[in-house]
Length: 440
Image 1: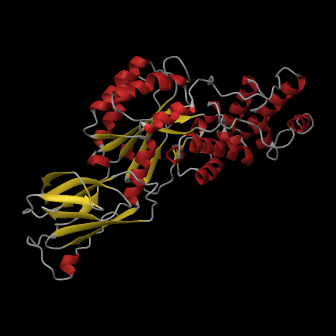
Image 2: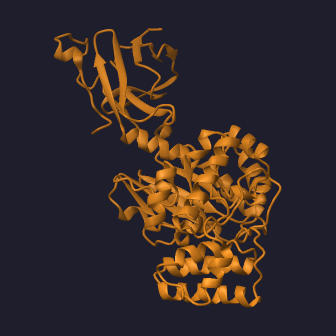
Image 3: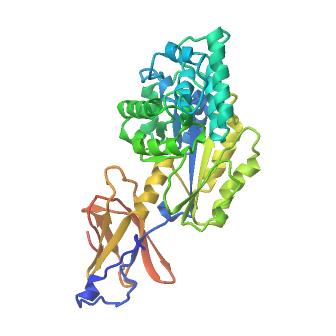
């Protein structure tokens, strides 16, 4: 395995170890942080204020961290939503004579979202839904209908920005920055929450790039690692462009070793043979608590499952809200499973998995110490989640000590059928790991 490259130089050089046990020094990166049996990421979409004033305090009381995908254009000081392109009046006039087709659909679907009313934004959103369902002709007809209303004045053109199904709130960048400092992930859900699949490229890129720029400016690079395209889109054109801008998307992460089961899929984790599965579930208003808990229980049946929970509304505000009482019960249940399940933001789990799959462990062994180093092409300034390692020791080592780059590392010592081993955490880019009997 790529992450299990064991080179016993002591043997190759003819230097014997006391036990002469080929297991000694063998080191591997564990499948999950903390040697857990699975992972859970709690995520929230849309930047609903109740997520921050109700759900987050519940999580904080339980010492759980989550990911909040926010609509950055709502936050004061951010780049605002806007249409980029030709004169809107020119486009509107053209719609009277030229029907919508493949040559003008993306431009028109982009513009109608920014003509200033909730009704017009709904035309954009519904046309996008039809387009992603493959009902292309229906999407064209709906856009024609919307522009006809604009031309005859039954749907006003106010040139204002409307946020889909989401009232503006009072959350500030200062607050979001403080939440990020606490360990929560604050990440992009675009500028205005459009149907990215029906935006033309310049407007799509603006929604993705401006949101990222504001997160970088007001919080920092840690908030620009992952993003979620609205409506859970998996449109191929969107994915190609979005992956150029963000290292990871909750929508899709096309890793060969990762099976992705989206919220609408009836597939179960046990149906895949891939090394990892990202299993997205969306608790909505009607989802019963027992079903939600059963998702967590499923992690005990496999060792490859990453459960990604997608919440929206909270306590009567936002799409498909869950109540405060439900969140208290559910998050408390998740907390009770932490002895076997790693609970972490989407960003941290993504990084751990990529680090494990993209890192080789090189071990050198002699009579007095075990030396371990990482070989990886990943940037350690970005991929800085600690890796959990397991190293087998000689049975006669009574007081092993370990350091990385000269810094002491704490460890847990245990035993299995192969022998004595220690579990510990180490980082890419922090130097060589040295394990000694009674060493410094």
